[in-house]
Length: 76
Image 1 (cartoon, rainbow, N blue to C red):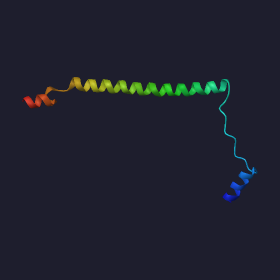
Image 2 (image 1 turned 180 degrees about the vertical axis):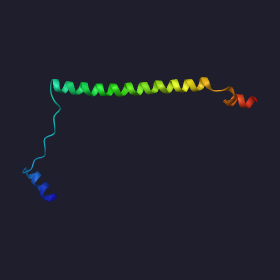
Image 3 (image 1 turned 90 degrees about the vertical axis):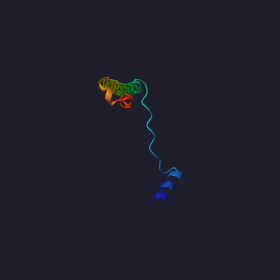
Image 4 (image 1 turned 120 degrees about the vertical axis):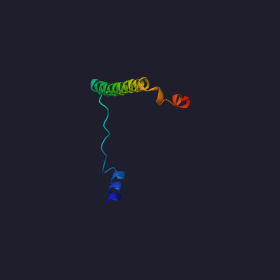
């Protein structure tokens, strides 16, 4: 069956679907804008997460006791 289909395609009896062209004019600009907005929202989420991670790490360093640091253990 597959070889018959390939033969039919070579002979032009069967044609594949035409690839979808990107929308033109305002529709294309709207699609681009939506894609940019989605990417921007994702970057904002990543940025907020990184800020939280920085605050968390900074808070952990500030609350550490001197006895838990390697230099304090060596001097004791």
